[in-house]
Length: 168
Image (cartoon, rainbow, N blue to C red; front, side, top):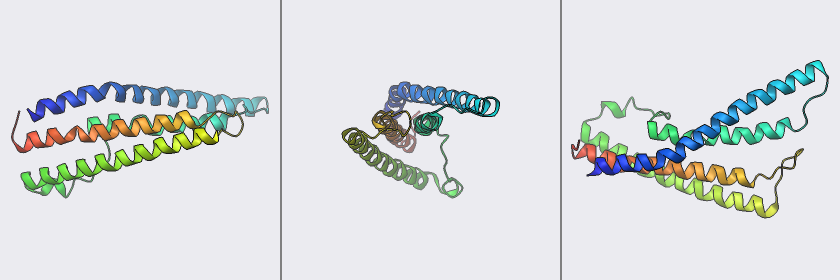
């Protein structure tokens, strides 16, 4: 029962996490091409592309926050497991359960604060320096990505409970 719930939760959050990871890949390609074009223009024509710093900054937000949920779903985020792996099975699963719940709570709070910060940026109309692009949508993007990552860690809860009950 718990293992089925975990599979269903992972299936539900995999679609938005795939979209976020795809956005990060597009942002990475865009940034590589834009910076390369800027270097070329600066070297050959002695005229850099205006606003490339603004675009790079915006792309970094997408590159950093985008793939985090996918990493959490696949379990490829950074973990220090050398001590946990040596523990007996039930205490290890208990510790993993606590870590999963604490991480979910912390990421939920970070997402909430990012949402409030994005609303603040919208109210103050915070813009990039050269191109005057608003930062507000990127705040919402980061809040959404962090919320999906929190759900990915929450999805580990039934998976860990299922393992402790030896469900298949």
